[in-house]
Image (cartoon, rainbow, N blue to C red; front, side, top):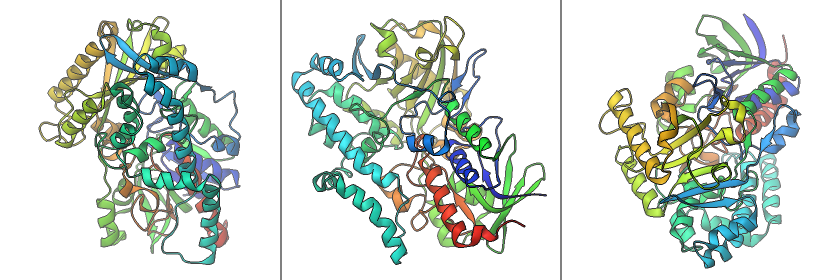
Length: 534
């Protein structure tokens, strides 16, 4: 039986950050990943012959750059790509509205649709930047422990409060005012153009199953702007070689600091003795003993699948059962024999390409999902990675990955194992593509559809929820994953969580992994490294 300081379950990007940070401090760390590649949802794999496709996550704009310096990630291993377009919204009839990284081009573009909106957009970009800056203070610190009234805890809270205060009292007050608002209410205060409002509101749909009229949408807009420069939309940066290159760089960093990363190693259960996590049991029968266990797996699966509900108590089990896991996103990967016939396609399609012509379109798409139906006319978010990563596909070919909202994990009629259900979704998506991007359908050489059920069975995302829990106001900060357990610890001593189901939340941020590592190290310091080495 092998022994280590920490065994990390899963090799998603957050788990790899935690492993690397612990190993950097001299810990003996073992990472165990069920699949044959690292990254989880942030993986790039061969879906079509000769191609490498980003399976689920596409964008690394939220990834915390401090982690790059913390872990000494090599610039030769990790190259960021900032395409000229941040986002292009297809408005129908072959027309499009593009937000560029160049503010002057964006102003000229919006002016074609409305002078007043063009004049206000720079102020909006500044506003979004200021809201995200204040929110980032909360996202970069562990949430408060409401049950700890000690002087130590009060001192820990003082630093983020001082940081937020330095950003201006008015800004902080405005953030608190705006967070509960719907995206519709917020955007109606700023703009009149429906195409622009529909485009900007798409950020409020990420991590939620509701449309733009739902409360809390403004928070998600701020959250998704809290990474790299958002340019008035949301933080968006790609990775040379695909999103999997980021995960591979994190795995290399972990190994460089001394961690072992094993793929094809499925953890069957977490061993618990007298209320203390002591290691894991692998599917093949191998046992690994550890002084602490860290799970990057979704919380409900960690507690009910790997630990076992009887070890946790009825009240905690009830709270875990109530975690909202509501996957509503399917992804269609396409292999194309060329770009669709859109004017300036190579530039306009280099960022996110959206079907979100107005707020009502998005609202109707959300209404379908609310009643357990795939949206008849879904919101689409397409990325063409070969425009900045030609090596991902053979010469003369392009890849396009389309995230489809909404396609609920739980369907009122039919199921995702039924071929007719899958074919119906595919047909509906291609009809919308035909309408908003005429000529693209003829470019399709091959396709692969990933439903929410595929995300669960292949990537381990319970309920097909790519965020490991909805990003609603009731599942954030000290309430994520459940109230009372927002600091990466669990009712099982020396068992910690480090995935997107914990604070600060979903997306490719690395934040949960970084903060979890800090808390683990803090606890270890209090008890002499959990007893030290044998």
